[in-house]
Amino acid sequence: MRALQLSDYRVLEIIDLPVPEPAAGEVLVQVASCGICGSDIHGYDGASGRRIPPLVMGHEAAGVVAAVGDGVSNVRRGDRITFDSTVYCGECGFCRRGEINLCDRRQVLGVSCGDYRRAGAFAEYIVVPSRITYPLPDNLSFVEAAMLEAVSVALHAVSLTRVVSADSTLVIGAGMIGLLIVQALRAAGVSHIIVTDLERSRLALAKEVGATEIVHGNEAEVLSQILQSTTSAGVDAAIEAVGLDDTVKLSIKAVRKGGRVTLVGNISPTVTLPLQSVVTRQICLQGSCASAGEYPKAIDLLASGTIRVKPLISAVAPLEQGPRWFERLYSREPNLMKVVLTPGVTS
Image (cartoon, rainbow, N blue to C red):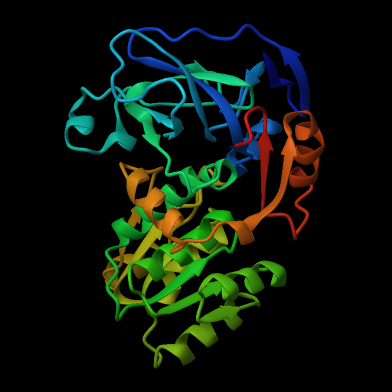
């Protein structure tokens, strides 16, 4: 089978690999589409430390079941499916509580680090446990389905933030996850959604998908507009989708006393917190990791059109063009959002 391999940092090659065989409890998937994630870009140059070459990356995928291993009964050959990016054990205390994203033995497809190596979906075929698969409705295309992992991440963040319809909310960062968080907030009934970003083109997209206000400017300008919009109180909740020191600090400054901050972005391994402000203003600060069972809801919201991903997809390209698109995404072209590679089946 053809596969796009990270052979060395910033070196991607199309190579031939054997088609993997599903073991008991596993399924072989013929990959139809796989999105290039921001985490793949950060792994591409070694910055994250979680894409140690050689590795086939890719975890945002969908396709057709090509074969099933012994004991598999939830899917059959020919089924259209997607699958979670997280391979969870299903047995530890976290899994038993439904917190599969916190599994003690958690692995992520397309990741290699000090603890494990797991092949991803930038290939014609991939083997995954049947327990992480989900059926796709006929009206949801494979390209759209490649966005389900990111949609699930956004839904999980909004769920943890515990928003209600009357809340004023701030989304920091209008990248892929930020724009999906905007739509997830809309789906949750929130009507006041402020979005800030440094790229005007991304703010225009934020407005298109449901933001009620967009703010472009430095920290002082952002805070000034937020205070104007919230009668000087600050927003009820902020969701940070960048992961840098300055944007984390902005999320804390922007919420009201007793407000809620959910951190989704994780570019920087460490940030400096204004501790006294968090404590004395009684800010609830939490992180949001991956998704925890939100796939069925994500599928329903995409299939119904409640969440739209087509405006966020910049290009659909064959697997062989992967190296070129990685370079363009790595250069941070401002108008590029999501690129979906298509290794195999197209219907």
